Amino acid sequence: MSTINTIPTFENFTEFYQKAVEPLKQENIAYIRLDGKLKGGTRNIFAYFWYNDKKWSVSADTFIDRLKIAFELAQKTAEPFVIKATRDHKGESLSIKGQPIRNNKFSVYKVGER
Image (cartoon, rainbow, N blue to C red; front, side, top):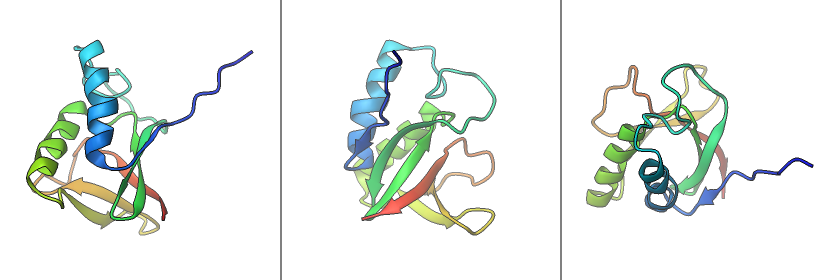
């Protein structure tokens, strides 16, 4: 019988980072990305969190160091992200304020609203 894995949802980004990312990094020091791989894209979702009354998905290919940058910024300001339209203008994604847009290695996309 297969195990059903549910993707966790966190109330905010800080909770997501502290309860999901930090323990993962402590257990797997060599990980660069959430999925433990070094390259390649994935459609797998690592977790969800709420931000500005919108639910956001964090892709498993997101780099842990980018999440740390966002976490440190979130400790200083209530608005650590910039909401941008996706390339096809059919959705929204988050970018870290002050970070380069190209090759940002931060894959967070809107999946719903409250």
